[in-house]
Image 1 (tube, rainbow over the protein chains, first blue to last red):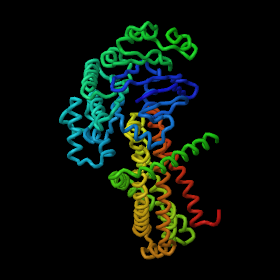
Image 2: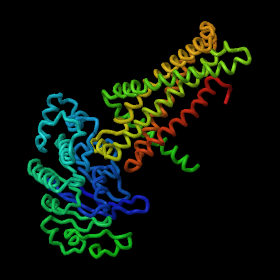
Image 3: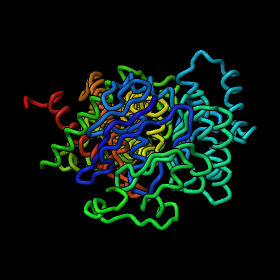
Image 4: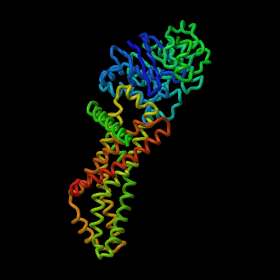
Length: 258
Length: 249
């Protein structure tokens, strides 16, 4: 369903992804982890076609996102929902207007009552019932993520992408978001792709973990195998004492990349 | 110089992509009137004030210029020629660039850095058609109307100063003013406004879409939007005036 084949991407002289190949298992939760600046968000943006690779293919539902036309990209994206880091809610809209936005644009045959019912249902699913008419300006960080998640699932997509769902949240709210993702995973039974540098939350939620480091794919394993891997980088990251290498030479000398 | 041409090239490609997006997706329903209302109503009070006081000063300076020659009755002609043909269109454009243009650049810039533009893309909604098209239609509807309002206010204020303060005969002001311009001059003012509106909207939105990171990026984009669109409008004003009123280029 989603597969990256030998994807490389550079911005100027800086190489972000080096020959990444990754097949995302369908109807399971895959986490892509790694320290900040190692290409996790860039990988996610390749999957939804916001970025195109310099080399390689990004296959989504049989479409190569690297070469797809705008119409093909939009057709694939309608099968995705995405939760952005800060929710990416439209500030001038109410909660209801934000969540119903994809319906307004892609389900014009729905009546306003049907739209509202669908939005209320999704808001209840993310634990925020009865806030349809609230302005987004008064929402807390955790609430913004929940509303963003309601918007991501309102079209009932086949794949949901989470970009750092825990970033900027306090530990308690962060745990609540992890619990919500777990609930959604059980309730929806669809493909989740989570970008994160939060180790504990990832291990609890993910079925598979891919680790990026210095633009390389260090490991991609089922979660139970991943946590026992005999790999320096993985072990250091799991112990939370991984320090980013300085420059490409140092990356090339990393023991886990040999 | 090379960076200027590179920037113009990027702007040109962006405009091409924008018009393609509008052609394919069309403007979103229900947004255009809202944008037109916002651009028109929000800019109107400041435009009225500035137009009025430009009119008063045109009358004063015209009087000072012609009085030594005994031609103070020509104030009406001076005001109408300068005001209708040049100052009202460019002042209305400058106001819209300063108010609506900066708002466009900063709003879109903030949306860009908060990933709201990416969110539109991921929701399969073309950001150019959704964000820029209603603003462009709104400005193209409102700027010609605002220009005509600026002309009326400028002439009225100049008439008031000429008659009340400078003691000129009202009927002479009106006679010289009306004899020096033609009805088509009002149409030309509106035509200028259409070109200025196109420049202000596309330049401001271009800088919004290409804004750098953080509040500094938004500030820089807003600054570039107002400076660039104002300069282009002033240069364009010369060429349009030359084409409409002057000799051959």
